[in-house]
Length: 79
Image (cartoon, rainbow, N blue to C red; front, side, top):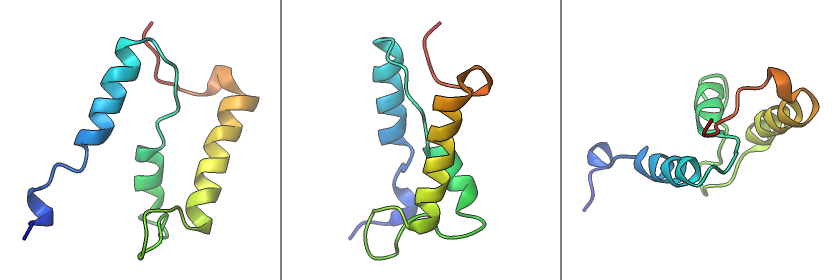
């Protein structure tokens, strides 16, 4: 039996971030945006790991900002 509170839920994201940074691969990190938005409304379904309609709206907005106004969007990249 696993205790959810003992799991490091951020570890996968840190490993991905480290790999992309080390390889100078630009990407949009959506985890923080989805986490913040989830305080307003659920961004994931309760019964599976897919984004809810609201989660899709959050992601759409972030991708739009990245594609349309990239000079004002903070992206993760090794400079």
